[in-house]
Length: 458
Image 1 (cartoon, rainbow, N blue to C red):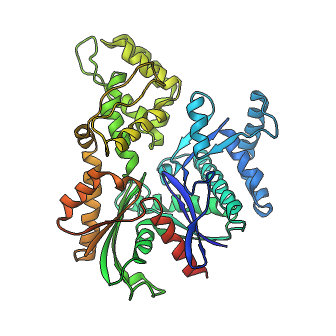
Image 2 (image 1 turned 180 degrees about the vertical axis):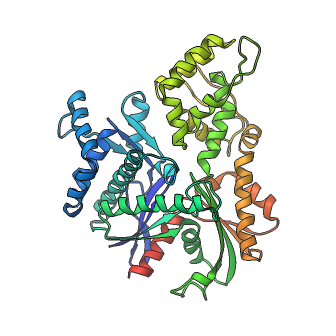
Image 3 (image 1 turned 90 degrees about the vertical axis):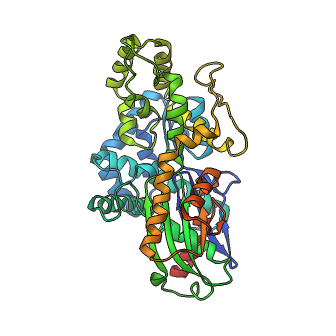
C-alpha cells in the first residue's frame, strides 16, 4: 500500500488514498498525529528494539554493525533486572507520560529530527540517532498498518529545504542535507518500506492546498514547523495539478533550521531562566555568565545538551552557587539539571506561547520543579523574546519571492507554529496587502505527501 509519511519535528503522521480521498491513519491511540518523542528505560535498549523488528534480510548486517551496542543492551538489562517480555521503549504521548513521571530515570528525546544533519558527530552518535529515527518510524508504521489493516510498502517522506542552518548554496548545507537524507532513507528501509522518495515539505503542503483552487495562481507556501521553516513559490491551479512533471511550476524555495522549537527556547531563556539565576549578580557585583543557562533550554542542539549534562557543568554550577549573590537560584538550576527537567521546562514555555494566543498574561505552573514556583509572562514579552527567529522566518519568505522574480497572488500558511497571531502579523508586515489563507496546520504536509506518493507509485 502507498502512503505519505510526515516524519516531523513536532509530530509524525501517515496518510493514504482511500477511494479517492485522503485519510490519516491512527498512530497514537485514536489520534492521527503522534508527538515526535521517545522514552527508553536505557538508551542502549533502543538499538536492541530496532534489531528485534528488522526484516530478516537486513538483520544480520545490522547486528554485525551494532554488535557493541547490542552487547551493552544485554548488560543494561541485567543491571536493571529487566525481564525479556517487559516493554522498555515508549513513543508519542506515552513517552511524555513516562518522562514526566520519572525524568531522572531512563532516556528521553523530543524532536530527534532537529539533530539530523548536525556536523561534527562521531560515528557512534550517528548510529544512535539513526536507531532513534528507525525506532520511531517502526512504531508509526506498525500502528498505521494496524489501524488500516494493510501493509505499507511505498512512501514519500517529507523533508525541509535545509535540515540545519547553513545557506542553501553552502557546501556544508549540501553535506548536512545528504547526511540527514541518508539517515532517513536507511531508517525507512529498516522500518520495512521497499520504495522511498522524498519531497520538500512546503511543496507537499502546497499540493494539498492546490486541490481547493478553482483558478491558476502563484502561491507562496509558508510552512512553519517545529524545527524548520520552509517557503516555496509555486504556480498552482486547475491547469497545473494535472501535470505529471511539475518542475517548471516550482519557481523558488528557501528554508532554514528555525521553527516553533526556537520560539519556545527563546521564551524559556528570556522569561523562565531568570528563575534559575540567569539575571542574578555574582558576589563581586559582576553580571552572571549566561552560556550555561542558555544551554539548559537549547533542547534542539545536541552540543548544548551534551555540555549541560557534562560533569564539567555539574562542577561549574557548584562553584557558581558559591559565587552567586542569590545562591538559592543556582541551587534550583542544579536540581533542574539533576532531575533532567530541562525538556519539561521548554515544554512549559511552549504551553505559555500557545496560551498567549487567547489570554494575556499567563502564569506557567512550575510546581514540578518547586512547590508554588511560577512567573507571569505577557504577550509583549513573548513578542520581544521571539523577535530574532521571526525575523529569520520573514527573510525566508522574501528570499523565495526574490528567486521567483514575481509577487505571489496569495500566501498559504501552514504548520503547527503558524497558528500564532504573532507569526501572521509578521507575514502581513513583511509582504503587505496579499491575501493570507490557512490550511490544516497539522495535516497539509501529510496530505500533500500522500497525493505525490499516489501520483508517482500508482
